Image 1 (cartoon, one colour):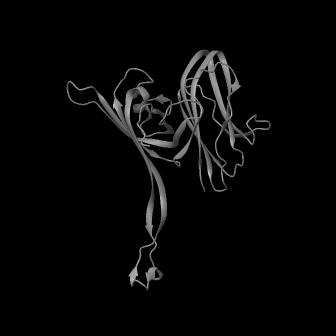
Image 2 (cartoon, rainbow, N blue to C red):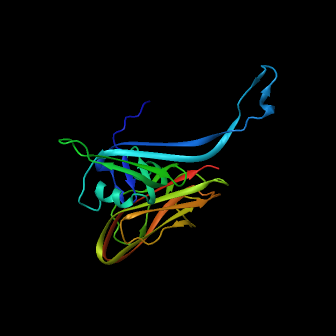
Image 3 (tube, helix red, strand yellow):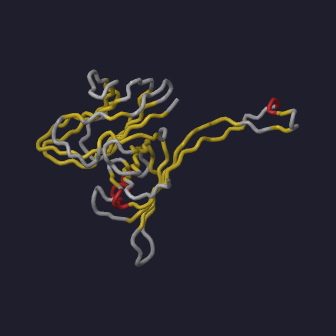
Length: 251
């Protein structure tokens, strides 16, 4: 059945671009390298069939929408500040609830274009190039759940990480409130059972005191298939909104 895009959510670093975007294109490709030799000749057909193998893999992302400015969370402020920089990138094509589908990578914002003709609704376009694999994964912590104290989330089942594969984890810190240096430290744990009886910490992010994104790559194998996000919060009257997505890259 064909999918109709209705509730796509888009995050780049600490910016939630959902309310200012209406188009996103993402794709991955692997360079085709010619390895044809004399042995590629097929005597039965008297033809030489080209042989190839995969070279460098990459992903390219483009987005566009309507241009707001004047706030650190607005498109203009956020995308201009991050131009040329690397940060986490997550697209949620079917909503942002816990366990929903997510695509994620670490990407460099290489292009930002804005404004148009007189009388137009001001547009923007941007593009990102991957600096890590593009992974298909899940939402491990939803962006709308405000956290005000140290705690842990619900375990979510995904897949094991094979030898030669990687676990990719993206963090987007979207909102910070409080006084006396509110700080958020996020980790991701795994276990072989939903109750998480003996969790292993797989990734820990740098303590966050400002809006922004972080990205972690964890080498396989990881035989566990249950994952949980934990967080440590400090400061006076702290409150954080943040998104965590995770995915597995096969060997």
